[in-house]
Amino acid sequence: MLTLFLLLQTPSPLAARADTVHPVHDALHYDITLVPSDTATHVLAEVQTTWRLRSAAPVEMELDSSMRVIRVLVDGKPNTRLSRTMYARSAGEIEVPHEKQAGDTLSTRVRYHGLVRDGLIIGKNQYGDRTIFADNWPDRAHLWLASQDHPSDKATVAFHVQAPLEDQVIANGVLEKIDTLPYGHAVWNYRMDTPIPVYTMVVGIGRLARTKLPDANCAVKCVPISVWAYPRDSAYAVSDPFRRASQIVDYFSSLIGPFPYPSLAHVESSTRFGGMENATAIFYDEKRYSTRNLGEPVVAHETAHQWFGDAVTEADWHHLWLSEGFATYLEALWRRHADGDSVFRAEMRTAANTVFGSKDTERPIIDTAESKLVDLLNSNNYQKGAWVLHQLRGLIGDSSFYSGLRRYYSVYRNSTALSADFARIMSQSAGKDLDWYFRQALTQPGFPVLDVRWKHKGKKLTLDIAQTQTPEWGTYRIPGLEILVDGKPFRIDVDGRQSRQVIEGVPRKPKQVEVDPNGWWLLKTQSVSGN
Image (cartoon, rainbow, N blue to C red):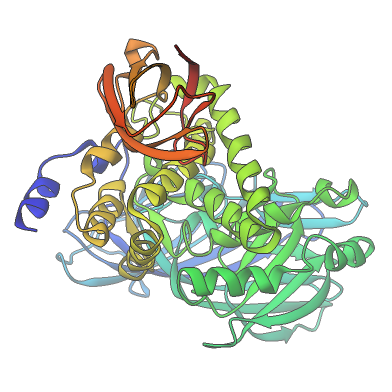
């Protein structure tokens, strides 16, 4: 075991970080007051943030330059260290000087207003009613919310949102109270006591019908599940895509660990994505409701994100597969659990074909050269990421795989991780060094393409296996590759551009030779021929 730990402590591309901006200090809690206009895209907001300082450097927050900052307080008082300037502000950034040291805590309060350009989607929904929905991914939260807008810095959050009395308000966490105001409005107060990434801190306002579903995870602690939809879509939402929403939570809870948050709401919204996994309040694209094509796989995918993406968050955008690949594979495992193995296999084949036909296959999963964050939403991080997990499960077995997955979740719950962290824990679970596997799966482009030629003589079957993929993809190690000879399974190890394996005990010339018949490896077989 000592050798294993020494190997995993050497510098590894699995720990590579590519984001150019990283948080300066640790934001512990955001307390957000939001007062949107009833008719326009103007908002008035105040954000009080509690910080743990990492150095004596100024506190920095991102905020869209279209917002006008009215006031900045430090520990409840104007900053007097600089004569007449309370804060220095460049485009998109608020810089607050202070006189404290590393390890100290600090409170900032920023009040601002302006017209929202993005991140908070304000307008009419598909039925002509006014709605407001936050849509933060990847780093659009700061366009309306003064924050440290990076996934590696997680914080608890409270919302105080003003809205007309006829509207409903959804936000992260638990609704503590609704304060009625004398002029036809109310303030909805939500609180989330578990740290979450800023991109999942959301609010939604509109005419929404709420439907309670059966509680989930009651074997540990019951989790209230609800559906929020525009009134004319409410019946469809409850009867179709969300009919097994509670059972999905039950399944993932038993597979990974108890649901990480106090409740879960599924919300029809104006997100630009098919679904967005905001912690405790998943937002779905309203167009999927009007066309009646919001499928249960999307619901399972976004629900899986509550564990991986929200509770365990990638510390750097370029490790997005730790979120999207996990959600994609867990959704497929739900289909296997609920609908059978044939459905699961078909879904994994579809995922493989997506990878085979994608231009992104020419690049590795951990693609530190990609600077456009939205382009990380690709087949590498979704479908190929799911295959990284599926191959791993086949390589180390169900027991080691699921125990490692549960331990990874337990260790990094409410925190952040890089690919090296996952690789280390899975190696420990399997009892062997898997660094080689994660290096090839995450840092090499492409996939193996095999040309298999066989020759039978006596009772021996000789297999010559060539990896014929483009040289730029490198070669792949495929231990324990299953070969089915006239229905009888054998296992061989493929390593290098050319491999030769001799299988004893084959009494006659085979009629059929199949490669990886059970589909454990992401590979293509160019040809299988023999004499």
